Amino acid sequence: LQTNNFLTPERLEALKPQLQAIRSRVAGEREIRNPPPHLKPLDSGFIDYPGLLLEQFRTRGDSSELSRILAVASRLRDNVDRVVLLGIGGSYLGARALFDSLCHGQHNELPPRMRLGKPRIYFEGHTVDNDSLQDLIELLENTCVDPELREERWGTIVISKSGGTLETATAYRIIRNELNRYYGNSLDKIRKFIVPITGSTGKFRELLKAEGFADDQILTIPENVGGRFSIFTAAGLLPAAVMGLDVRALLIGAASMTKRFLEEPFERNPVLQYAAVNYLMTEEKGKNVRVLSVWTKKLEAVGLWYDQLLSESLGKRGRGATPLTVVQPRDLHSRGQQHQEGSRDKVINNILIRAVRHVPMQIGMADNNQDDLNGISRKTMPDVLDAAYKGTMQAYADSARPSSDITLPAINEHALGQLMQMLMLATVIEGRLMNINPYGQPGVEAYKQNMNKILRSK
Ligand code: PA5
Image 1 (cartoon, rainbow, N blue to C red):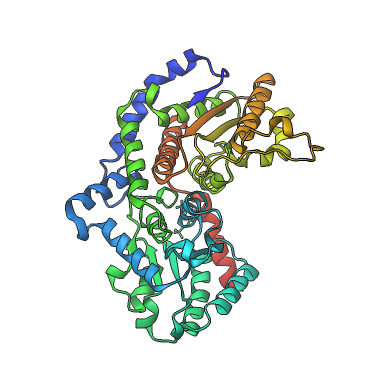
Image 2: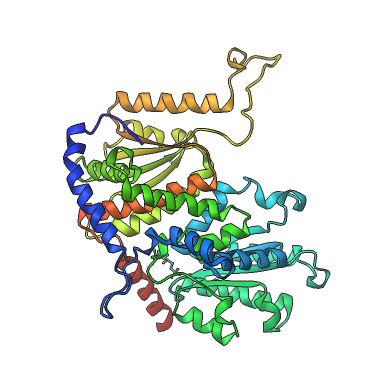
């Protein structure tokens, strides 16, 4: 992480003792595994969970939770060609971020021989969009024509930690009926095409039990991992495994970030650096809009995931920065003007990727040079992107617009594991610096209750 000169080194230095104290506090909160009955378990379970899963996998092998997740994923992959993932908020955004950043950019369009047994993935249940769901059902009806021919089959992954979220429940009821229409009414048959992921209690689990799901056919999100912190539980890992991603590399990345957070000094600790810079920029410099500026469109959904993480964790008691994800250079041609010359309420956190996945493409020579590109014909796409980035940073520096850089070596499972764990840990640290509880989302709960009341009073 590099920071521009809008914070003095002395101010960062002065914050270090407080950061150390808060790190110890957050580390201590991990020990509250069995809280007294009047206290809800803290959602801090996410800190150790990646390491815990890896350790169990090493020591318990096939009977570990990770093996179970991988086995369920592989069964679903064997059974279906298309998967509808239902979920919202933390039960959607993590899986979406992994899909967009780590799968082939045209995954669903690839012919089966290029997808190597990985099903096409569709996301629903995160809106209550009648037409979008119908469009998907229409697609499924017209591609998965005959289950007996075993050519094209589809199934669903349903994720809801509380098991009571109306958007997801509504979509599940509809999709469940579609499964009946497609495969017939035999519950035994249909269960093969449904992977439910939920908390240890709740309406959804009750429904599943009534439908004859055994406990070992339901994957569980641990009680002490909050929804938006659940990407490295079954909520993110099962979809990741179905997508054919390297789940262990994700976990190793996340666990290594936890270790770094707990053990490294500020100078080598990206969690503390990110939290400190953004905390100071928001709380002391009034930069209330936090821009996550991603320099590849593959990371846009990671930005949306972070939007939720920051909003629900710190947007409380009239405080908390407003997150905004921008994809560059796309948004330089839309929001860029305002970020360059508009209100001075932003801090810009760039995410840069050092190495592209494919061979860099050159601009190339052409006989007709009216576009005047022959002079830079040997430059590559990454060269053009780099120039756009440097030009933007120069312009920001010239007009005193603060920014920081986070550079990933490449987009892969290990790096994503590190990045996402880093952002979750930094959000908790920032909350504690602000004296705001980063866990829980009472505002979201209020709307859920109102919505239920309104629906049932008609
Ligand atoms: O962070 C949270 O806990 C929430 O934003 C949830 O992820 C979201 O409301 C979805 O809830 P559930 O997984 O219970 O359906």
